[in-house]
Amino acid sequence: MHDTDAEGNEFFKCDFCHNAWAEDRQMVEGHKGSLICAHCLSVAYQTVFVHKSGTTVPENVNCTLCLEHHDTPHWESPAYAPACACKRCINQSARILQKDPDAGWKIPTT
Image 1 (cartoon, rainbow, N blue to C red):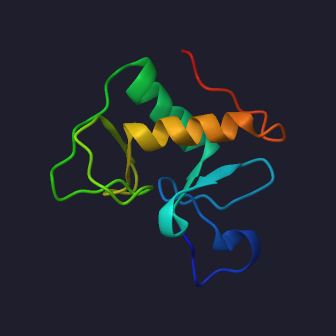
Image 2 (cartoon, rainbow, N blue to C red):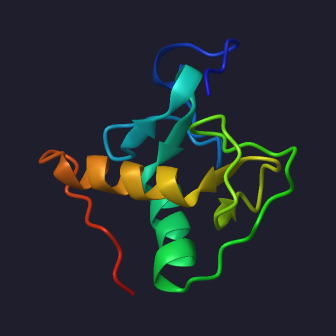
């Protein structure tokens, strides 16, 4: 998300936890400026892929990252509803962040 009342790094915030971008808080951008930080992505990946316990969202709820509705498991932000990430976006974001050699982020396995 873009916090129009903030400047510098504080302008870019994770849609799921609202923490600002920082050198040690990498983020992946979705459609129309949506952002998920590495920490939230780790929790989302563990929930949906490792523990297979994502939730199905109602038809009128779209993924915060792709802005589409999918009948697949989602991870919902525990702090900032209705922010949620679909299984496809979690997977794509994880693959993108893992490829960044500067991020040092790995897909969670446990």
